[in-house]
Length: 98
Image (tube, rainbow, N blue to C red; front, side):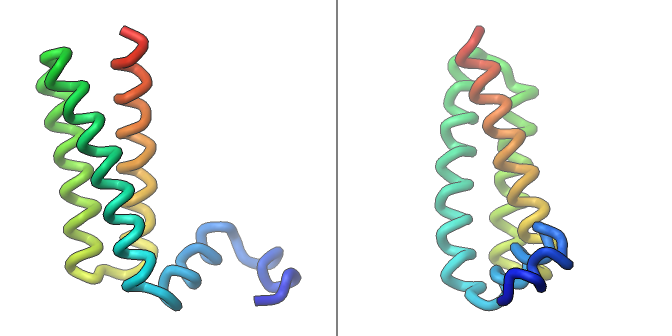
């Protein structure tokens, strides 16, 4: 993809096109990384006995994994993935600072 084409499109559009080109490779990598972040956030939630955060983390992680497995459209997969990663990182940072 040329640099001028990237400038005309948004960052998310470029990400979704690259995801579609190598769907199964990227799906595997993103699913593994996101599951690791989700499990760390779940462990910290359990250590702090915060079951509300545990429920949120588990639901977002499962939603992301199910979107990948169901082969949802690329924008859905990436949107849910980024939401899950950001939420998991916020939970991890907030619980580590407690």
